[in-house]
Amino acid sequence: MSDPLNPYAALYDAPSQGPGDARPTAMQVVKDNDVLGKWQGRVALVTGGTSGIGIPTAQALHATGADVYFTARDLKKAEPIIDQIRKESPGHGKIEAILMDMNSLESVKKAAAEFLNRSRNKLNVLVNNAGIMAPPKGTTQDGFESQFGVNHLAHFALTVLLLPALAKSSTPEFNSRVVNVTSSAHRFCPVVWDDFNFDKPGAYQPYGAYGQSKTANIWTANYIDRVYGALGVHATSVHPGAIWSGLYVHADEATKKQWASDATIMAAMQTPEQGAATSIWAAVGKVWEGRGGKYLATCRVAPPTDDLTSILSTGVASHAYDVESEDRLWKLSEELTGLKAAL
Image 1 (cartoon, rainbow, N blue to C red):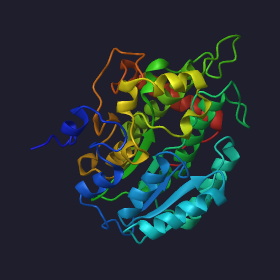
Image 2: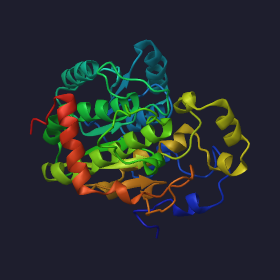
Image 3: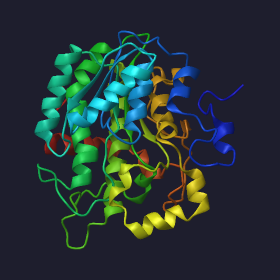
Image 4: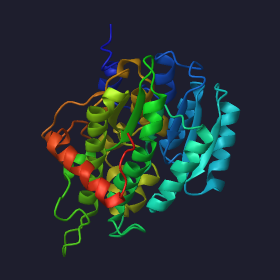
C-alpha cells in the first residue's frame, strides 16, 4: 500500500523522462482522490488562471463539480480558457474570471469584493498561484519591491479579505483550504527584515528577491494553519517543480540556453498539467482534511535539505518553519497593506 503522504513515490523516484512522462497530472490527482464530479456546491478561487499551471489548476478543480473562479489581468485573455474548460470539463459548475492586477492593492481589494459578491460569500479552496520571477528592479503601484509586492503582499491582502468567507464556508466534513504556490527558490533568501524592498545600493538580486517572496508565501501559509486552523481554515505551501512557462520571461537568454542544453534539467521538466499536480493534491487530497502547515513538493511533504543552490532540489530549507518569523511577517504585512483579518 502506498504512503498516503507520498502517494506517487514510485513515479517521482523513477528516472524522469521529461514533460509528459509517468509523473501524475492534476487531473489524475482528482481521479485518484475520487472527487471527480463530487464537489457540487463548493467554491474555489485560483489566482493567475490564464497562464502556466494556473490553467490546469482551474481545469482540475472544475472537474470536481465545484464552481471555479480565477483571476486575470486581462479578461479577454481569460475568455478562450473559460470556453475550453466549459467544452472539455466533466464538471458542471460555474467557471468565471475576475479582473485583478496584483501590482495594485486597490485592484486586489476590488477583486476580493467582486468575488464575494459573485460567490455569495462562499469559498472552500483558495489557490494563491499567480506570481512573477526575477524581473529587473521595480516597484508595484504601492511602492513595494515588485516580487515582494506581487507574490506576497497581494496574496496576503486577498487572503486576509477572504478569510471570513473561508471560515464561514468550512464544515466538519470539509475544512476550508488555502494553497500557497511557492518555490524551491525559497532556499535562496529568507525575509530581509531591514531591507525587504532591497533599497540599499547594490542590494537587489533578482533571484534573491524572488526567494524572499517565496519564503514569505511559506510563512504565510504556516501562520494561517497555526492560527486559523481552529476555525476550520488550513493552509499548505507548494513547490510545483520545474515547468517551462511564462514565469521564465525575465530569465536571461544565456541562462535559458544553459538549462535547455542540460539533459538532467530537461528530464526533470514537466508539463503544466504535471506541475499543477501538487497544488491539486493540497487542494483536494483526502489526506489533507483538517491538517496543513507543511511545505509540499512532488505530492509529498518535502524533506529537509542543506542544498541551497540546486534548481532541481525539492527539499525544504530549515528557515521555512519559523514561528517567530511567521508572526513577525504577518504583523509587518498587516502594517504594509493596512489590512487585518475580520475574524
